[in-house]
Image 1: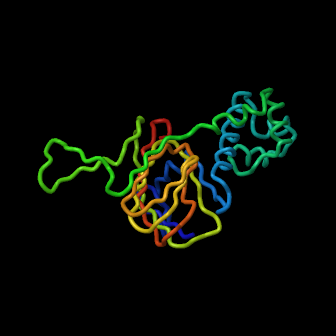
Image 2 (image 1 turned 180 degrees about the vertical axis):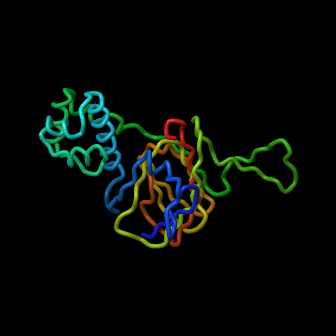
Image 3 (image 1 turned 60 degrees about the horizontal axis):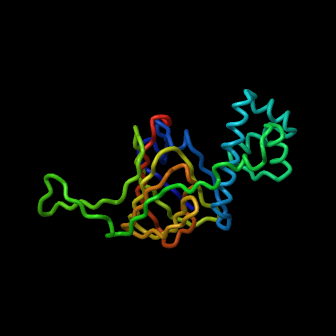
Length: 230
């Protein structure tokens, strides 16, 4: 898959912007094989968050905690960054080292993240002060949250691939479909997006294109980040 993003802080052909994207600095992005369930990615993310939180609470470095658990530093780093799937044996050793139950390492995996999906032409028509003939306002949904900075990207997908990226980051993301057709996953739901469709989602839920139905695909991505991510 060929993915090109143009926008505030985006990487571009011939160089990299001086201001890196918050979505890259404070979130995660990794490839998902086309036959890998999104739920599996969410489970890995929950384990990563809990292991990292528990280690920091213990006051130990990655190396010290890895030695206590009996695994390599590289393996613990991969677990904390959701880059590998833990075996039951490793989960048991982690739980024992943290003195918690194995199930507590899954905390948060069953949380359904919020999203608002609006089909083309189905947004609520609203009247605003100053509205007049020729000026129409269509509400494409809203999610609550305190935000400080916006990042706006125009994303273009031109080729299919055996792996698709899945993202997680703080804040609320808004996606507006312009060209093409794709199936877009968020948390435990998958949305068939056609031109004119929009999707607002909680960025902490794993999300990304899972099927590129009609290429080329072009969509607008806008993320509103909370103060804590800046």
